Image (tube, rainbow over the protein chains, first blue to last red):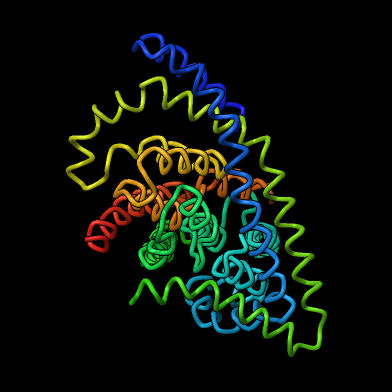
Length: 199
Length: 174
């Protein structure tokens, strides 16, 4: 997938650059791009190490398990099949907790494990079940409390107030997640009515 | 005041980890270094990908196409309150995390980290994720071929996220 993006962007840029008379700028852009990727990585290294370290401490202290317990009433409403059967509910709550705490690296494997368990409840193994879709769509609405990468990049770009975006991000990511949950529940019920044998 | 509190959020979380190290029974400092090592590996591990993508995005920006596109869409985009300069970010965000990070960082370098466009970009980055990537990885991992209503739902959430993030920035950063 990334190869395609790279290819499309390069070809478009060369063709567009020549057509629009920006040919000279292209050569400079390559040189600048290579070095700015390195400085981007350097500005991310520190904060990512710090954060992954802190989160490992929280994980070992059992914080994720506690958060998962707090979330369980919510899961009952939005993941009814998993909640009833008990298959995958633990992984789903761990995935949401990991997202909340900003451990994106841990969230993906947890979600994949949850998918595996949810597949056991799925009467049509070729098609995504309602719970699976809710989990996937919820993950696309990144619910996160501490957007460390964004803050680090803002600081690296010279902001004096890198933290000023935290609360708007909370509001936006909470609203998007809520919309994702509601939209998926509505769709699930609409589809169920039409095809009684579903789910 | 609110900004003061939110700038204390991260130091406070670090302090909690410190409390665990002081009073906890487990070797929490070793947990920290173990986690930090994996963070470092991730950060350095994405460098080759980033080099390719930052170059591609820089080329794309330099070619003048985004400007052409944004001039074309800006009347419509401005009407719903979305700055047209966000286009490179909006194209890459649903597909790839590293490509959108590259687009985001070149955007905030160009327009300044505290400009309105950059603030909108930050909130969009913080409240959305790589939707096509997530759906394809999640579903293919268990052999699902029909994603049913997953992509339409995720697309609606993404569009709402773009619109809503810009709206919040407009109200919040008065």
